[in-house]
Length: 112
Ligand code: DGP
Image 1: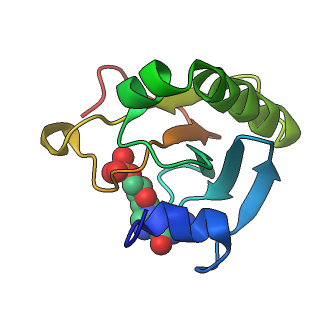
Image 2: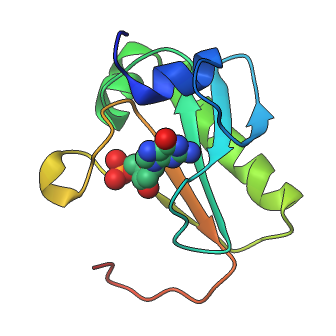
């Protein structure tokens, strides 16, 4: 999709610190990390949010989770948090589905 930041990172048009890639997903480090490991896992194809991805491409949806688990394991973490922000009201700022993988520090609940 034109003017989508994460489509451009997936396409290599904008640099991204890519840590893992599969047929349907790309994982790269968040530019504004909130934990020692903060990686975004995105589908290669454009979908606006997690629910739309699950409805339109369930296999890619599942692959986001397996990719996140592989990245956490590669970085040495058995404990990690996965987050999908869905909608501007809860902080979604990039409208290309992305799964936040956060690890490497204690975390509180509920999230802010
Ligand atoms: P969200 O707020 O859930 O939509 O998360 C968007 C995340 O994207 C946020 O944590 C910061 C990150 N981000 C924004 N612009 C860039 C960028 O140009 N490169 C990378 N790697 N991450 C970005």
